[in-house]
Image 1 (cartoon, rainbow, N blue to C red):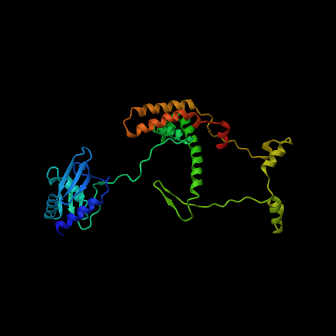
Image 2: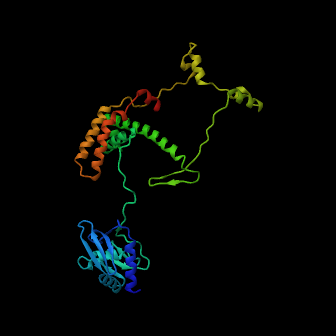
Image 3: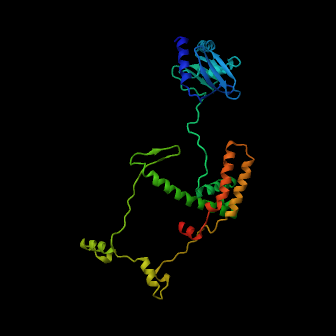
Amino acid sequence: MTFQSTWSNLLEECEALGDEATLVTPLSKKPFHIVDVQEHRIVIEFSDSEEKRPLQRNQFETLARRIGDAADTFDLERLPPDAEPYAAVLSLHPRFEIDEREGLIRESENPGPSQLVQAPETETETERTEPDLSIYADALLLTDALERHDVTDLSGQETSTLVNLYTLLSDVQRNADDLRQDVADVLLERVHHDQPIHAQFGSVQRTSRTYKSLRDEEEVLATLEDAGIPRKRVISVDSSKVDEALEVTELSRSDVYEIEDREYVRKADVDEEHKETRLQGLKEQLAASDEPEAAELREEIDDLETRIEELTEFSPAQEFHAE
C-alpha cells in the first residue's frame, strides 16, 4: 500500500473523530485535540497550554517508513523530540497501533482501536438539584457515619455509635422502601413481560405473584361440604375471636396462648438538633475542600439545613407500626 493511501485513510479517521475526543502522547501523556484536518497537515492543540501545532504529512510518511524498515515495529524512545503526537495520531489508522507496555508502535493487519484516545463522557451533564425527599438528608448523614466508623467491626464500636448507626439505618430503610415502591409503580407501566430493561446499575424485569384470600366463610364451608369435607375438619380457632372471649372470662392469656417473650431493639427517638449540627460540620469540611463537587454540595447542604426538621420528623406511633 502506498503512503498516499495510508495518508488518505488517516485523514478520514481524523475527520471522523469526535470534536471532544482527546488524544494522549504515548510517553509524556500530554493530552491534545485535533482541531483541523488539511490536505498536507493535521493541526492539533494541547489541552494544558492551548498551543496549536501543525503535524506535517511528510513527517508522518517518514515515521511510517521507519516502522516498516524496523520489521513493522518501532521503539517509541527513538522518536525525535516533540514527535510523540505523530505516533499518537498515526495510531488512529487501522493498520497502526501503539503497545504502551512494550513502548512500541507497530504496523499490523489486525490492530485494535487506538488506546491513546480518551472518549468524552457520554452522559449529559445536568444541573444538580436537591431532592425534596426525607431519604436525602438521612442518606447523607449515614454516608458520613459509615466513612468515620469501621462497620466491619461492630463489636468494637461505642454504644452511642451503634445507636446513631441504627437510627440512621432505620430512617434510610423506611424512606428507601417508600421511594422504591413509588419507582416500582411507575416502572410497572413501562416494563413488559419477557422484556428486561437494562441500565447502568442493573436491570429490571416484570414478574407476577399469585395472592389468594378466602371467599365468604359460609360459601367456603358449603362448597367443601358438598365435596364431602366436614366442617369441623377445616374450622380453626380465630385469634381475634379468642381475644374477645378472654375479655368476658376470668381466663388469662397464658391459658390459651403459648407465650414467648422476644427482645429486640427499635428506634425510640431522633435528635433532629444533633442531625442539624452534624450537617453543619459536614458543611465546614466541604468549605475547606478544593474538589470541584464541593461547591455544589455546600449549596445543597445549605438548603438541607433549612428543611432538616421537616425532612426527619419522627412520630413514635408511626415508627412502631412502620417497623
